[in-house]
Image (cartoon, rainbow, N blue to C red; front, side):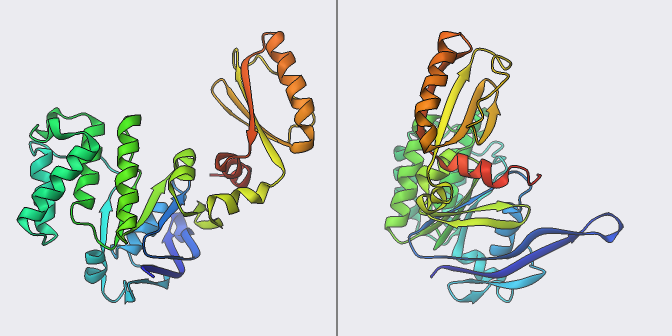
Length: 310
């Protein structure tokens, strides 16, 4: 076992000394070679939890163990076990990706030749070699993000923590990045993926937890979590405009609107009705098209967090 989080609670004092629970009695474990997803909206408590894992913030109560080392008692050792890519964009300034990554490798006490070989592999695998010697001020956000990723895995610890690693990264290089992460786990490294991208998490992680208002709402494999809304289907329609559908059928259990995209949940026994209804909406020019599919992790996330506030 790489990480053992035991009943962690972190309380901050708000106005008039009110207590704000950033994390509320959280417990979970991560095994070697596992990708664990930590998913939740902004302000759910993800970053606070990560800061406690790496020993930069002390919990109000509870314990965290990294490779059997108590993080509260040995924060320096804990940070030596972890490699972290933070959510904030990397301020490279005039440093080139090659300079930044090689410097981080040397700081991790890696052999100079091994650092060079590893850096060449990462740059080639991510297809960013053409920018290796370009100053940071001239780089796009995506290349900076990939540079930060390379810095975190140039000489990875036994636990790599990636906070929104694919922000600003183009779709093709996202695939390359996930290939590298999977290779890390094959070599025995464990990964925490911090994200609010539900679709990305569903494809990438072995297990995940949905964090909401400081608490774990659910934890398990993607299939286990999706089974919590078993026997439900997902109907997604693209609207002609935001007001083209005013009245929805009674068999719709819940809905979520994102721009002109309307996502609805329904019982599987309502599938014939849903196809008939959606086809009619296309004929009446209310929607452009529709898709019917099994429930996704996004649907579960919306159902679990809807009505619970931000």
